[in-house]
Image (cartoon, rainbow, N blue to C red; front, side, top):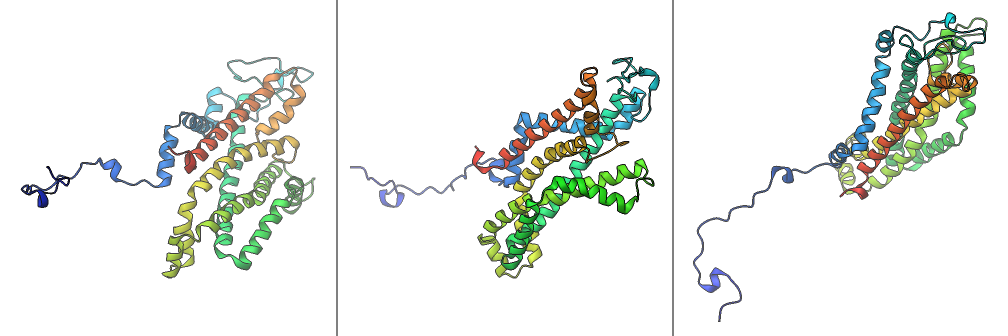
Length: 338
């Protein structure tokens, strides 16, 4: 009867003198990947995300090279072509080789030049506000969640207070206050100065009211992370607080920060256009899609291209950024990993 255990020491079989050959593993499987690298790898394989990123980069290049594009057409956004407008203010020409999108009713300004230049304020305002609110929100959320105690209570009260304020009323009032401080009376005001003050006041209002939601999100994440073993070990070892915050906690918050920023960017683009359309945002002579839409509503029936050009631009840009934000959120969500 053969033994049930195939052991050389028990069966009397000679021991092999050759060492066992280790199993070959590919170098890719031996390397560990961080959650951020896994998310970025998933994002690169997402076709919708890559197309959306390409559309966003297209509008960024349009904004950067707006002077070159307008020069290629041979026009600029401020020149009046009164000779191409009839007595009622309607254009006498349509889309031509000299005016690729036609001209503006009443003033005769080139619509293509104003469209490419109009991408600049939307992207600049949305980009600056996103960066400012992300920095403030992450910093306040880190401090509130990690410090706890009375610091957390005070910062949480400030966050709730900011979220409860009606930002639209401040968007109306703040430009008037800043104009009276920096420009003076309406008789002394210059159009360029007014446009500049309105531009920075819009960034100020959106930044003041935009950081609180991100701060609340980061605070909640930090409250759960600060009880983890690696944070407790760092505190026991006497690691300085600022290093614990920015070298231990912050790398674990990259996912929520990126997702929040990618969703906030299209929101601020729509907000800037909406406030400008309502008359509390940007003003002339700044080329803006919101200003063009506000003016084009009056001429919609007679000159529909005047309205649809900026509307389509905003729609495509916001849709691309929204799809990209959804793809980033799915890529960083551990529950969707396969």
